[in-house]
Amino acid sequence: GGMQADKCPVTGATATTARGDSVEFDFFAAPQAYRRVAAEHRADGAFHSSRGDSFWVLSTYEGICAAFRDEDTFSVSRVSAADGAEDERWIPLTIQGRTHNEWRRRLAAWFTPQRARDLTPAIRANARRRISAFVDRGEVSFSDEFARPYVLENLMLAVGWPLADLDHLLAINVAMIRSREAPDPRQAFNAETAFPALQEYVRRHVARRRAEPVEGDLTSATFDWEIDGTPVSDADRESLLTVLFLAGVDSTVNHMANGIQHLAHHPGDRHRFLRDPEVRPAAVEEFLRVNSCMYPGRLATREGAGGVASQGDTVLLPLALANYDPAVFPEPERVDFDREQNPHIAFGTGHHQCLGAAYARAQILTAWEEWHELIPDYRLPDPTVEPPFLRNVYDLRIVW
Image 1 (cartoon, rainbow, N blue to C red):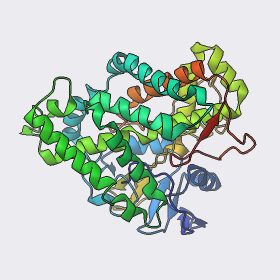
Image 2 (image 1 turned 180 degrees about the vertical axis):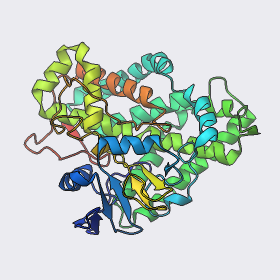
Image 3 (image 1 turned 60 degrees about the horizontal axis):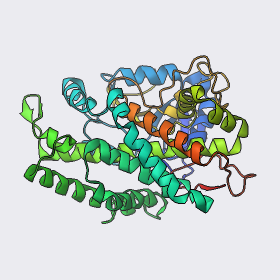
């Protein structure tokens, strides 16, 4: 499951840069580690890791954006440096060209900015209901008790999964996340209660909707879709629903929690967010930039791809590097709601830019608005220790 390479054991493998230097590096390293190595080799615009099958990492905003936009040179047939990533057919992530355009056109209708606006009252009610349930308690596990069920319910609302299935899908999501801390993450991910349970759910849901189609339901809609003149196969339909689940929850949960963690530690930013509704959209964008943590991969199709890669090499395009490039974002470490320019690519760029971007933005902004209305003043139990960067397995305790 290379969708969100978050918290995995860091192995001390060596990496070499374009100049042939060696650095300790690992695909599953935290964003800070990517940034540290990139800074050491900024002049090169890339570095190379000899770990496992080996891979290149592009490290400048310009280089990463150019690679995202050139799918002839940087193919989506491999979207991760994780072992076995090239064996997967993920709809629409690993599809390109005209076929991808057909998938995307149909899917995009479900995630337009207008649809995000239409769903916002339901999203807001969801946030308020959940926060109200624990507001008197004075403490909460932010991700586990609030952000994760909130985001999952919003996804289910958008794609038409029955809300009665929420607890079941939540358990599957948690099992997949916890797998990253297991002694053997791959084995735990493929345990019966984790990824296979998601595949089974998706199969059952497709059968249920085929028997009784529902108006305003994505799965039911796909029965009428043709791609390249051919009706969508059940295998592709199930792949699509699986990708929506994998892509539609964890990243948004992470961004919600990372922002709250910062605001808990920075009263000035928190008070500004509270008292100035005008600044909130810009704040969301700045937190998206600062907390980007995905490392999408691509397959180099020719020699000299990105100026460094050979044909057949895996090339990573880390959003955490593009969005911290000091040439584009002065003082990139600083959270600044007043940035003159913030052309971040937290949702990627090019043909495969995140389809759910408008919906994710609406969920984050709405959750933070409702949170601050009901819980304006809050802190971490031990405010002296700020975790360096929140992962979505981390139990973010908030007290008030």
